[in-house]
Amino acid sequence: MESQRIDCVGALVYDEQHRLLVVRRANDPGRGLWAPPGGRVEPGEDDPTAVAREVAEETGLTVEVGRLIGEVEREAPQGNLYVIRDYEATPVAGTLTPGDDADDARFVTRPELLALPTTTLLISTLDQWNALPS
Image (tube, rainbow, N blue to C red; front, side, top):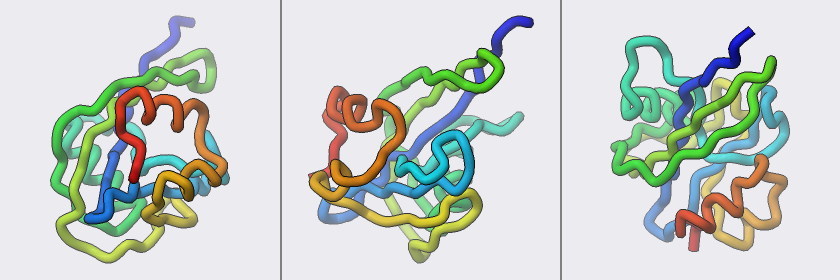
């Protein structure tokens, strides 16, 4: 069986203090770990639409999607591959409330982020992209 590439997006959402928005995943992959909001791109969606939908579902926030920050590949079940494109996004409306497959959501500083259990390679990837919070 040929492995599939599964298109996913993530959102690097910063507040006025340049804290990063992270959610604690309620489901696998990464249940209990912290990561930027994101998920699969649905059929017929472009990346910005998927980013905005995932952020709204997981955090209750409406965001304006900005530039592509970077792309990573992570192993997925059955030998498949998640291809995750992370975009900068700015909150424009809404109230931060965890929802959908997030059981907590918060803006964190760099020290707070470093103290949390995060998804595989998140810190080193953000560091490479110069995208760690303040």
